[in-house]
Image (cartoon, rainbow, N blue to C red):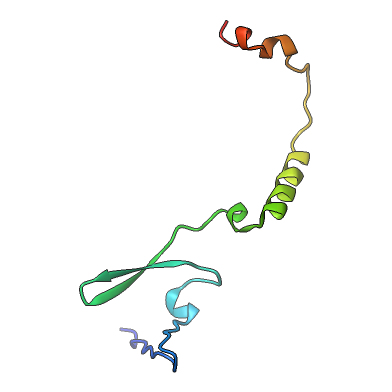
Length: 89
């Protein structure tokens, strides 16, 4: 059986848990839940990369992705087919 890890609060009352104890890397997020006298750390689902980017960087990343899509082969959809009255035929 592994030796228990002892955690201690610092001078300002903060509790720091080493990453190797959590088994998580930098930027990992956890939800703290109270279960009677016990506290549980629940890993939050990882967020998509775009959720962590500022709007300008998100837009640039999207435009870069679109530019790498395969170029269209074949005829374009005729404008007549996109008219509202023709969409339901």
